[in-house]
Image (cartoon, rainbow, N blue to C red; front, side, top):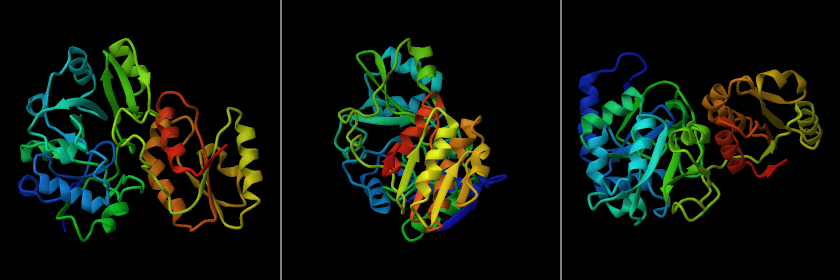
Length: 333
């Protein structure tokens, strides 16, 4: 694996070399503003097959395409509605994926044989430039072995792919730290398939309406698949009353000799009897989102009997955070 340091000023010639290799079917780990991705030429069936193999991903789980501009979107889709254009104008480039009708250029392996394809235009400079230089949409799922947590920095994921990826670009920590919001427009109403940092309120402000339908299993082929799994059991606890949440965690930890508590900075001092990992201030859900996956990976490194995780209120970005935590945890209180 050839590694390019993009944490400061990136070598443009080397980036062009990587982009050329990707266009010709090589695999690359690279940063986006959401999480790290593993990408290759999204119009090349063999290249996409290598992504599935590298991630140990089921082929019934489709892969989104990263694009560099509207012209590239229109080159692989058809029948875009006025509202879909409106949403793309409002939220692209950025942490927003929109489900559109694909055209014949997009191989069925990308979409799990569906006639729909997820499209995202990243705002991260490295990712956007890489797609632009490659000159083709990049099939790019999150850079993690399927079922494991997405990677928000290169060091957390590089060993998982050392024997099957050609290139890696180190862009430091991901800015957002959580995968994009996915939206599909159905009967002229945006349906949120997967919540992310673009919130329901923001989408409603543009479209006039929005449906949060993350639990439906008929909108995307992958909606009923388990997307996250820790190496150790985890329990999610949330209560509107902070003290009741703390008391519940303290009570539950008494049953375990080696537990880890993942919590907000303000509550860390209430848990002196266990390994404690602080994510961020409870007043900064942006920092909470950015740090969550790396903190959960750190929690697993203790080889605990149980990981206890404080939840957050389900509003705004908290909807996306709780979506991930509810998916990860074996038990929720």
